[in-house]
Image (cartoon, rainbow, N blue to C red; front, top):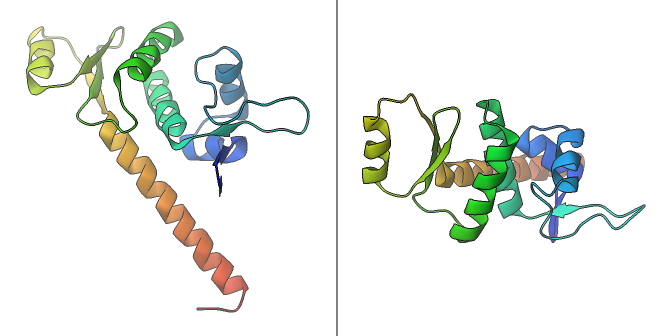
Length: 152
């Protein structure tokens, strides 16, 4: 699934739950370009990092919630500028129009006091879920390879 230095496009599409066309469009328009390797013409493939997968999964969740691509672009720029390699206690919240980055309980309470309906995406949870699902898939692939080789 993962190459030694990244994830290829077909695997990224399966892991994140998006189509090749979506991923290609997002790369061509600069929403999210692969941080390991861009496609360099015929025969080369884009390679995405784990952090890229986390951002792609967040983008997918925001799109599924009905957020416009223009607002998502702004949120992704913010995430790149303000987050380290692994998110800690940041939660993205939205009222369906705007996206808020909440880093403490006080910010969440303040947002909810306004009486708006909101949904939340906890970035550390996205990270953990993605890491867990990839480990499971690697373990399943290893068991399958052992079975085919006549092992366990």
